[in-house]
Image (cartoon, rainbow, N blue to C red; front, top):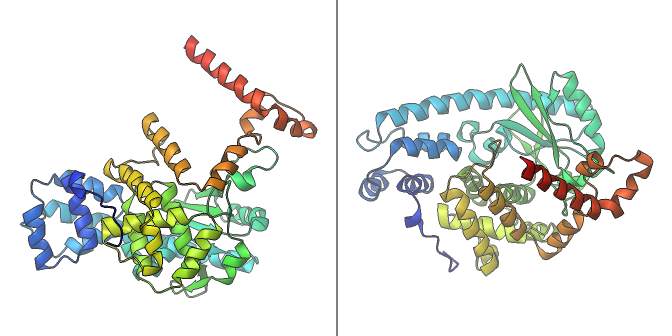
Length: 398
């Protein structure tokens, strides 16, 4: 390691330690021997839960399928195989839909960059079956959003979430709209930003100029350039606390590719995400043994970024699931504090000032004619205080 930080894996449950060991090692006779020696009294049901939680079933199955059954119980291999097969069918299903959407959007002159899904699996792993995906994420210019929505509706998709807004704050507060196809059981997220705001974003035209072509389909399907992909993956993983190891495995796979690391740092600086790039590199290095390029030495040695990495260990160690309908209050509070700590000073200032911008809840609390919506700006502090007082009063009565 090139940095002084040391994440003590001995504090992790044995099952999580074993999972990390398998992810970062080739499971040859030597590795298997180490597993038998180091990882005893494994709760295999918990191990299976961890594999599924971290969305790494395909990788774990392909590494364990030929191992002597005396170490890995047969039911584990059988269960992983069943899930592995399901993922293959799902990824083929998504691949077909990705090609349909890419062709349809292209025919309607909508420039489209696919962010995740089978395109990412093929790009990073060379095989769509080795990465799990539950939906398709694509990025388009915001000017084409209405056209894209009409196209998806014509294809049988249903708009799954409706964004409430005052004074068009949705354009920078949010970053995607979700659509669901009830018959094909496919979810599509249409992005106009890589991340929710407020914050600086790369311009779509610049990312389009750096795009690459996927070899997954017969007609061109476009994806982010490697440097933009690194920025997207680290910001996405950080936003979710790196609570799934799959996102760190993606970083490990990406770092093994050859691309312009200096340019990548420049993009991180431009987007004020250097601290997140440092956090991701440290976590990948410490947990997965990723060889970090020398260009990132200053990042992984930075004490602040090391602290951010230690904060993220909480999510992994506790198997936090931020995607459940209701997140425990203590987890939610921790996550809010962690997200704030990830921000640069300028981002923190902009984030705090954004609270002065009207929210849809303000319009619900004090409905005003559209012509008077600008009054929500000076009234915002008073509305906020009134809303909190009303909420407390209701809580006391309950």
